[in-house]
Image 1 (spheres, rainbow, N blue to C red):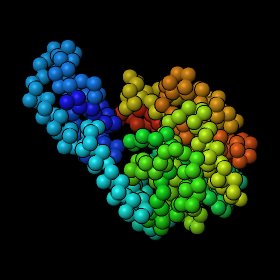
Image 2: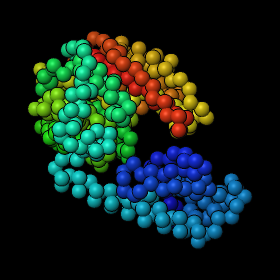
Image 3: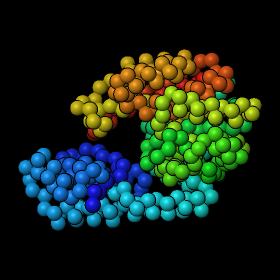
Image 4: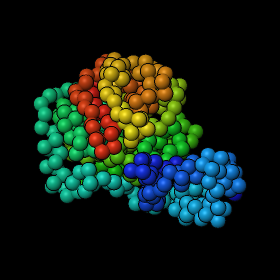
Length: 373
């Protein structure tokens, strides 16, 4: 047996670590640093004897075989190992989601009100800023709405007069994602009604790909980079149809292919609107840095390239140092900018830029609002 831990999120929590399942199949686990080391050794290349030996070499402590077996059993019972049991459960959850016919709102009652009247009031209060732009693309945060309400409001206020006949929501991959690009084929439910997807266009896009674009459908179940935009789109453009998509990885060649496929179908519409739902830098202890620091110089340089629609320049900027400030939109923004260029956009305008400081974790997250026309 060579156990292999599947993708999980790890965050420091005092002198311990919090293990979270991004797919939501198992509740969070609080573990010691010793157990974290054991989990790190479960990469599919070691059997139990190898794990015991490597644990001893690193700590000088003997790991009893029965104790290790119990750890493996616990992980397996919680679907945390990459094995047939996990894939069976994964496929079962996919079937459940598909059978619903639409994706339930994942953050209603948490990041925004689940009561329709309260939600409409919340949105209207958010959309209280002046300004009017004939944008064909916007960059907005997927930061918690309670934190970044001002930035959401400043961007969406500027486009509330538009009448798009299709909206593309490009999110980022926070969850288990095997394919570089995916599309959700389900309608998106919100407390103020369902946002309809354009299923005919999704079928048309699929023709350009040799893998199933809906394969990673479960990644959308809790994906806030999609969820947070749905309430604004439904409120402002209730009759429009959308294409919810996630760009998870790629190189310039493959990302251009994705963008060209989307552009080909979008050219059939009179008033498309493209949304890139991204945050910017993630720095500090929560993200693996010894100390928090000001990420704005890197952000400003990156934003300057975005506003000039220089997607290759922006991409290379982050790639040259392995995206040191962890800007999470590098792949999504590349596809976004390439689509905008194909549709005739000329420039972007920075509307707002903020840095959220989280003293408890000694961390910072930056985000921005940008319009493109």
